[in-house]
Image (tube, rainbow, N blue to C red):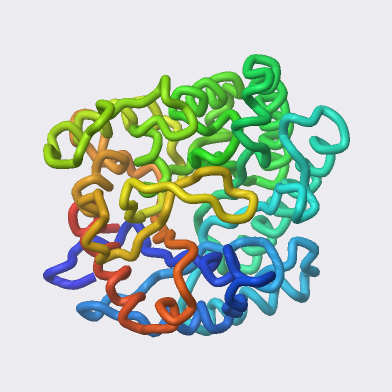
Length: 351
């Protein structure tokens, strides 16, 4: 907070999961959490630093079966670097011990078991004084092609699983945010995402997590051509057309949004691991990025009248699948932090 940057909210967080997502097993080695924390804490632009990190509850960063002693040590190491913890990601997918939200049997049981563990960790981190805000992020842990075999039936099954997950979260004093990414069945288009949230019908328990890179793909109808908003053949030469598309998108999903990722996207898709034809994160300064990050963040952070929603206390940068050499450069994190500061300058507030 300074004369040139008067806002101190929302708080600015870096995501830790780029150190593990897409790493290992034939790829580059994971970057350990201590290194990610050090890189985050070292970044500084105009005297401003990151306020915290968001975490993936997955080893080697944070084991979903972490003990209280493990979590206390985690809280201490984060606080020692002058950082807080915000939102955390529940590993609900089958390869990580979870199960498909479409599976009414063992899959649902395993899915809910991971939600229970994640919300317990989130609660304990609050109690340890390192997590003043944030939600628990999750998704349906199933693909669009499987969902499409019975859209109505599968949507109802996912909604029921999410309802039960919301009750678990509420018991821990937590909220869940469903990730808007086109690789998740029932969440792969903006219309199916809104439908799913309405079926759950408990916004105080289950809301939406918007990522600027992933939600851009909603406007292109990737994995759901019938729900495309941008015209077919749009060549990005007319920014007003993109703005209109984003207004349609955010009008539908903003009321549900309780967690937000600042990100860049070049309008291409890719597949990696269990991700099915999903959005590509770009570096903050990528010349091929299609988003004006500070301006387009405002479509999510302000309502249709231009008023700040203040729906969450922090925002997080998300950039996955970058080479380790890029992630180990201090300039990478300063560039990211500069974009985050620009978003807060344009759409933040002072407390």
